[in-house]
Amino acid sequence: MKIDFNDYARGAGLATDLVNTAPEVRRIAGEALAALPDLRRFLDERGVDAELTADDLAEVHELRRELRVLLDAEDEDQVAEGAADLVRRAGIGPLLGRDADGRWKWQVETAPDSPLVDELAALAGLGLLGALRALGHNRFRHCASPDCEGAFVDTSKAGRRRYCTPDLCGNRINVANHRARHRTT
Image (tube, rainbow, N blue to C red; front, side, top):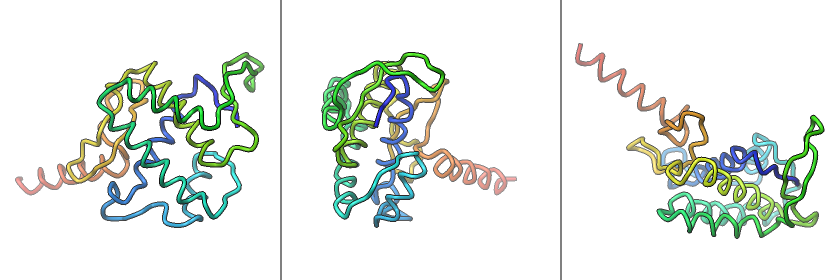
């Protein structure tokens, strides 16, 4: 896998999405990655092509716990060190490669024999490092919904994202506010 240095939003998004599949975040729905088919769907939706093994699910659950610690970290140095450790798990160093348009770009390549969890760790780690550098630690946030324990990295241009899953948590708040307004009229 080759990971573009400048595409931190992909890796930060993967980290965010993975953390928010946990049962403690999804209290009502429960564990989103309960079986290998769930993991397959999760990876497919994010454009990660990998052959799954029986051990991958438990290893991805452990990576999810590591990522949650980094998203919750109050110290930006802890985020930088932890994310760098994740990149080192499979990353074999920076290289210069061409993008689809033939332009040069910095990339991190993962070792050809890296297990899935290490490739995901490198992708997420590089995304967290890029977001930390480009956007700052204040973009690492907790979901504003009172009913959610989610966390996320706000990679939006405006930096005003409030919910870990805007379509779910944000929508719930908007519907509740709408109903409350109509009850009082």
